[in-house]
Image 1 (cartoon, rainbow, N blue to C red):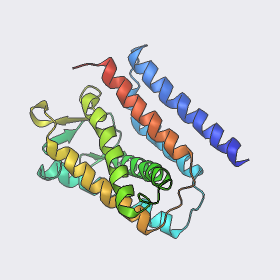
Image 2: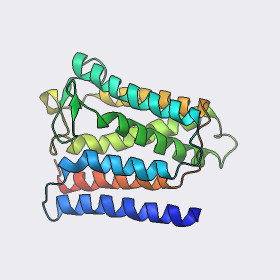
Image 3: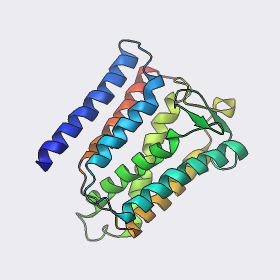
Image 4: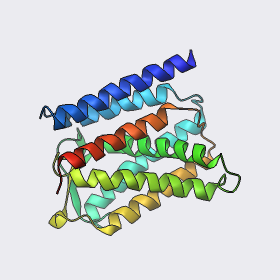
Amino acid sequence: MKATKTLFSVIILGILYAVTLLGTTVFKTDLMHLTAVNLLISAFVLFFNHTRMDIRFVVYASIVFVFGWLIEYVGVETGKVFGQFFYGNNLGYKMMDIPIIIGMFWLLLNYSTSIIAERLCSRSTALNTRLPKALIAASLMVLADVFMEQVAPLYDFWYWKNQAVPLQNYTAWFAFAFAFNYLFQRLDISTENKVATWLYAFMLLLFVGLAFANPA
């Protein structure tokens, strides 16, 4: 039953991201305005497969969602967190000029990369500690951001001052991703969710595909 649920979930996500990528790059259909909907569907499918929905998970998810959004708000308002940037209109409803869904985006990426890091490190006694896990998870989040930054302005996600992504953006991403992963470990969040690895892979492939379809 569990294997069937996992397979069904992966198929749904695979279709969702394949349609988004092919529809945008091959058929030139404007699907990016549905990004918020895609993220909500991804969240539902991902957390439907979470095996231990306890108070610790609720605390973790709430903190990452809320602080993920607050970090972006402070970043846009001050320009001192990631650099000077502002959001476009393709990430859905905004509150104080920041898309609400951005908090969910932080949660999806952090949860998924944390589970991947846990699985990679559990195979080695030397790596099966908090620091290596947090470093790997944060690195995976920065990897995804590298490709996102290449296509963000093309699809009206966000825009950087002078159209240049500052190094500060990646260091800030790494620092917050590291902190959120550390929280994930401290609260001992269940990592028995195979869909998380697939979701990260689909997200990464989407942004890699969009980047290659729109070379600089």
